[in-house]
Image 1: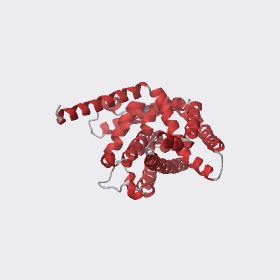
Image 2 (image 1 turned 90 degrees about the vertical axis):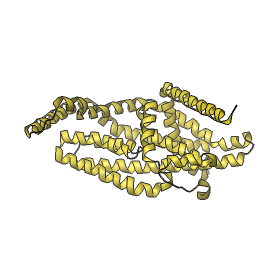
Image 3 (image 1 turned 135 degrees about the vertical axis):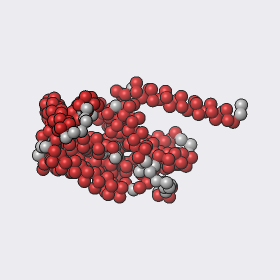
Image 4 (image 1 turned 90 degrees about the horizontal axis):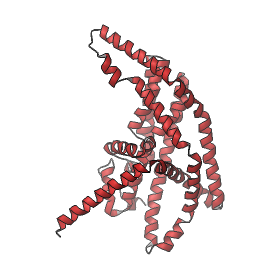
Length: 349
């Protein structure tokens, strides 16, 4: 067999394996999504848990303290935002009807000014009220996933307990355990740093948006702050998606002038956090190209639903960090990144 034919067969086998894996992910979406959420929570909790263990706190007690903190934070968010989400879902038809009325009034005004605007085209393809409906549906589907909170937290506990003994298991089971542990440690540190910084920046974004909307008097500021926090995990596109329902609601409730102030607040916060603070904290080497961000959003959203969209960039970043660790695949990490050149992990260590 010639080398070319052998390479082609290997490529076809890789593509076929990829298709099978993706089909399996879609089929197991209801099981995979809670597990991925639990994994990300566990990664975020690993840092505080390690800090507690360094202070001579036993592993079981450290896990209990961290999990109780997560439960307390989650309950606080649910109490503050849960009623707002329910009220918004109940009032959604009224908001949609009001927005359609204002849209038709705008079309009539434009037609009176001599512009040939098709009412049917606008209402069928560019209906702003549908954006509010999409936001409501996404909130409902995300709430459905969070209904498995007990199972997610239980999985987090087991992951944290298992992580404590993982190094010893690797040393016992691998021939070249030290090299494998170093690679795993670089990967684990990179993922923890990325998720920790991204979470802090997203939290600051959500708080600033909430305060701004509260000052303007927009309904459900805590809800839109939570949406801004979640969608900030999706750079570039996420901030735009988060702003759309809040701006449309401002048009209905506060009027066009105040809606411009709402949009300006979103723009200012995201420029501050996304263009100034986050790159300084994150480092340019951890960036993803804009095309990769968009493609990952489409792919993971298609494979895992709305939660997949929220986790799309963190999942892709984990793949990129894993590729950076291995010298043979570092070129793939460079293709995924936003820089034309980057420092290797070995030099950063």
